[in-house]
Length: 133
Image (cartoon, rainbow, N blue to C red; front, top):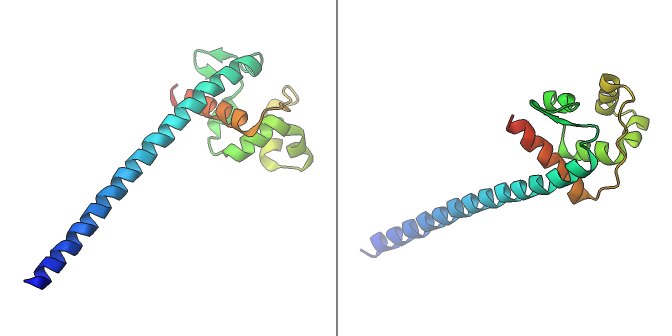
C-alpha cells in the first residue's frame, strides 16, 4: 500500500509540474506577442517620422522595401546595422549590404542615429506590414 501511495504521489507531482511548464510556456508566448505588438506600434511612429519620405506606403505595403520582403531571411541584427550604419557594412564588404546596394544603386543612405530599441521597433513594424499584406 505504501508503495502505491508513493508511486501515486510521484505521478501527481510530475503531472502538476508539466502543467506549470505548459502554463509558463503559454504565458511566455503571450508576453512575446504583446512585446512584438508594442514594438511594431512604436516602430510605426518612428517609421512615419523618419522613413516614409523615401519608403512610401502604397496599396501593396511599403514601396522600395521589396528587397527586404523578398529576402525575409535578413536578420534583425543585420537590418539594425543596415538602418543605423549602412556605410560601415558596405566598407566591410558585407555581401548582403552589397546586394542591396546593387539592387537599388545609391538611392538610399541609411545612417540614422536610432538606439537599439528604436531600430528594433522599426524592424518589427516593417515585418508586421509584410505579414499583413
